[in-house]
Length: 143
Image 1 (cartoon, rainbow, N blue to C red):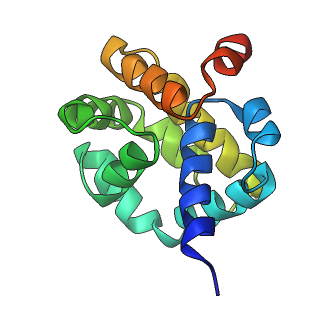
Image 2 (spheres, rainbow, N blue to C red):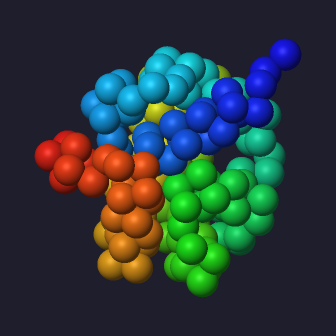
């Protein structure tokens, strides 16, 4: 049975990967990147159909899940959705279940973060996420 603490740590781990702070995540107490990668892989595989729909629309449960994991403010959700929609072909190719591995799932999350950082409002959310989780300095070095 998975504890609520483990689930919470894994969700924070997903946010950390989205914002590309893998080195900092390795220093933190919490799930190792491999565990976060497995969780991301399982999530992407189990949500393939929904992910396709949501990326086509730029909105939906998977977009909301990703935004929540990365602590993207609710008012920035439409911006985040449009950004994912604009890059859906690349993201869907990366999440193809036939080639999806733990490493590719982590790379997919990191790519979502790279895309999000191109928008100043979403980058502000990134900085807020990192500040809350005490990773600001490590993230700036990794950037």
